[in-house]
Image (cartoon, rainbow, N blue to C red; front, top):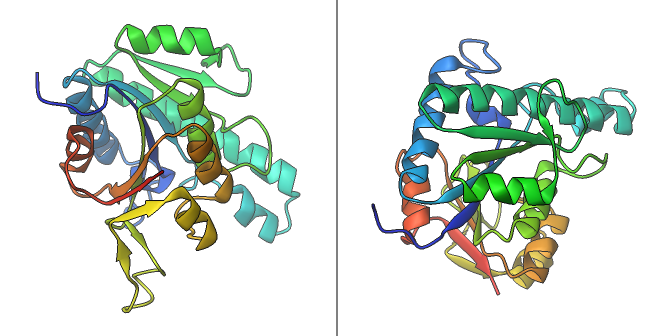
Length: 239
């Protein structure tokens, strides 16, 4: 079994990583299969894995509100999008031989289990990947907040935030060539600088429960395993 630093992790992924814009696919089967294999590799390290995946590849509540949809309705639509992604990821994981459960903040027993903390912990202890869908179940909260909340509840050792950049920058590196990359930050630094990589509620929850956050480039094929091994990767936000 390969060396690992963390026993239980929360992996937060954007819904966009599952899609292929060029092909016009919100959920691309090839990409989904690759993501499943990468998560499987972490499971095989002996790590207990929980996942929160966003729904932005299908629908984003805030964007809907900007287009005239009531914010609460838009957020609930976004929560349903995260559940669609969760079910797709579950299917892909089970396709590569990983026992997986989807638990939702919105009750829909025909398709997934409702979130019950003790049951979620039991699944993790049995080596199952647990995917938390439906956000927090409340409008006005992002999936970043949901990942921080669930990470706190399951007492995860770390929150891994997978993005399209290799860490946290002082500004958007795609728009500002002078943006500075941070190797390490405190929770207070992240909050005071209003860094947009995660929302303030997520940073605050992790700070209160002393859960370090590692922000890294998801598209580096070895990045998740490297983070779990405790290698110097991305930006670490901690006390």
